Image (cartoon, rainbow, N blue to C red; front, side):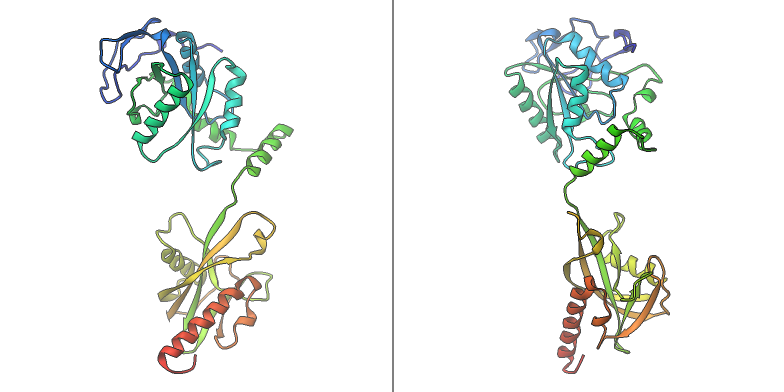
Length: 350
């Protein structure tokens, strides 16, 4: 692989990124002002080179390697800091720390590699980074290296920052996002690929999926609207998974009711509580479902089954619970209590 030469770089040098001062073209023995006061001068080779990045790719691309190679060639000590998201195995962060560490160590066994967790505030994260550097190389001054869209605009710590800017057109070849998207297009018929999938899935934390369920009530007819799925004789309440676009559980309940009844007029959604659902699809897995149950008032329209429901039926609320699928019986019992409470408020029967 042909590495980018020194002439392919220009560097932004400064006491901190807030200064944003453009320095001269880098030299092997670059001299920069110390952050402590401005009179203390250090040779670049005497400072620790710290490469900060995520390296979320199946292999190191030329941009990654050029920065690490440059740091190794200009510093006696090089530290690679791998950013670690709190949510593992997300689309933008598919690889865990250990997997990325092994990838880098195979090519660069001489560098020290450490993790650094994301934080919600730049100042806290910057302090964490400075503390980590001091822990790994006590008392050392450091130069921090970042790539395109890197940490540098967010860093508020005490060390110097350098950001390589490549020749025009190079960025397209160095896009980690494009590499990940390419890797995600199709599976690979290899034992290593299958092992990788198994490893990734086995390290996922158990997920509690959020759903909503809705009992649509016709108070004048004393009926509840229930749905049936293909191949099921028993009935169930209207509902489904909460979407990332839903602003609230109430919004999710309204959306699901609209989708599964073909726009039935419903209002006055009342929350009846949350319940763990013994869904057969998750019964033998670590993942589970937690639903929030609503009662809503029917206003107008003729319900027509849609989405994943095959049929809709109005059922008398005096004898509906025996018609429910087993996993919804706990919701049916809660609805019966709700109806009894309404009847008690009115001083009559439910």
